[in-house]
Length: 284
Image (cartoon, rainbow, N blue to C red; front, side, top):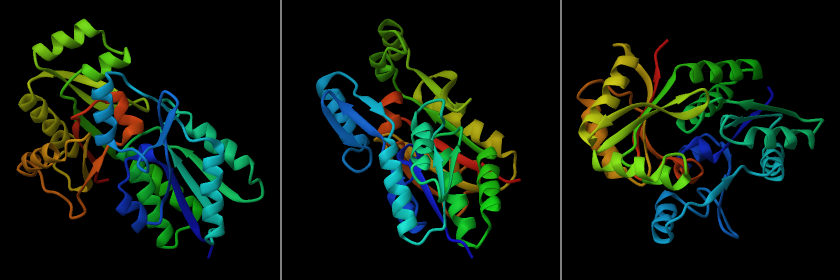
C-alpha cells in the first residue's frame, strides 16, 4: 500500500506536538526585520515578535517559503519512505506559498506530489492537514485522503476578536486616527475567514461584548449539532484564550480533542497582539 506523507506551512498554526504526532512536516514562513530574517515557529514566535514590534514601533515584513524550502520538505518525506506527498498551503489569496510549492513540485517531476490551495488559513488549514494525515494513517487512497481534507475544510469555521487596531494602523490598513478613535471607544473587530482571507465580519464595543458575539457565532454555526473538532486560537494571549474557552464551554459541549494554538508570526503580524478566537468543525 502506498505511503502518503503530509506537508503544510506554518501559517496553518498547527502546534508542534500535533505536527510531530501526525508526522506532518511544516515549512516555515519568513519574518523579516530589515536585513534580519527569522523562520516562523523555529526562530521566532508570537511573544518574541510583538516584544520586538512594541520595542521598535514598526512591523516586519513577511514572505512565503522559497521553492527550495518546499523541495527540501518534499524530498525529506520521500527519503523517509513516502510514495506520495500531499502539501496543504495557506490560501493563495494571502500568500505566495502555494506558487512556491508548485514550483518545488516541478523539481521532482517523477514523484507523486500533490499541492493543494486550501483557500483557508490558520487552523482552517491545519484541520485539513490533520484530516488528511488521519485518513492516510488509516490506509485511505490518495483520492480519498484529498476528499476527506476538502470535506473538513468546508465544515471549518473561524471566529476571533481583535482587542486593538493599533497593529492594523501600523500596517497602513487602518488609518491612525481611525484606530485611535476605535481604541478610545473600545471598538473590537470580529474576524472570520472569507474568500481565503482573515476578514472583518463585525465591529463590537468592549471585550466582553466581542467575546460574547464570538460565542454566539460559534453556537449559531454549530446549530445544536455535535462539534467534531474544536480549538482555541490566540496571539500571545493564552490566559485570555483559556478564559474565553471557559465561557464557551457553558454554551456548548466540547469534543475531547480540544486544544490551544498560537496564530504564529506569519499571520499574527497582520492582525495584532491579543487576538482570541475559536475554530470549529461542525458535524455533517
